[in-house]
Amino acid sequence: MIDESQGTLANQMSQLSLDSEGLPPPETPWQEFLRIYRKDYQALLGFWVLMILLVTAAAGKVLTEWWVVFDPEVVRLTEKFLPPFASPSPDSVDADRPFGGVYVLGTDELGRDVFARMFQGSFVSLSIGFVAVGISLGIGIVLGGLAGFYGHVKLGFLTVDTLIMRFTDAMMCFPRFFLILTAVALLPPSIYTIMMIIGLFGWMGTARFVRAEFFSIREQDYVVAAKALGIPEGRIIFRHMVPNALAPVFVSATIGVASAILTESGLSFLGFGVPPPYATWGNILSDGKGFIFDAPWLFFIPGLAIFFVVLAFNLVGEGLREALNPKLRRR
Image (cartoon, helix red, strand yellow):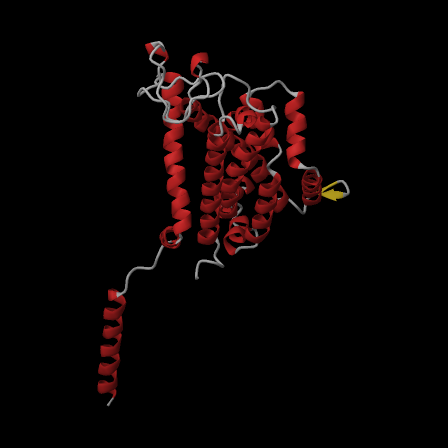
């Protein structure tokens, strides 16, 4: 009887082992992220739009500044306000003719090729967005990490967390755009000034995200074990805590790039943006606002470009939020 039961148990165990061998291996977090992200068709659409834009921006830098195929600075006063897909006049100099012999997006009030200016502006606008967000991320991660890890440490009658968070709250009390506008108006106009100012006034949300994540992560078993083993605090922060706190930061950064592009466009529209000779979508839009009825393409083409790029960044950010948020992964 015992032998029969043992034999039955052995058969069941062997059957279970065979069944487990037939199961697929468990998903890694990266595989789970890709599976969820691929199901979001809007996020995928935004991703491919951004990929096309990045390639366009890189090509714009090369073909308008390094190897000049499309010259955004050539002035042709005899060919002002030509509509899209117009051909140059027969009397124009060959050296001044656009590449391909047609003005794909028309010309502006100075006869400059709008396509060439939009081509150059794609790189400038994107570089402002990415550099500004990089600056704000660096400041936000440092301040948020200090508040989350050393928040209990006292500096006089205030803790580190109280000091940093009250400063963050004070910065958030002021209208961000008007702070940037005031700073830009007081400083020399430059593309680097725009990048720095937008980045320096955009770190508050990132700091709050990182602080909240650090409060949660510092109580996890692996962090407590690392402290018990005597691992240096710097290594705990940058090796174990920062990588696990970056998921919401990536979402914030994606949307932050869109916000930085909108901010630069607003500054340029008001006349405080990137100065000539650089073309950005914002100053092209600003130049076209005076000719909205006579040459509407000068206003609507950069406006639509800004709209679709900001929409693509927001779609990607929303897709990242759903794919990286553990509470939404099981949908």
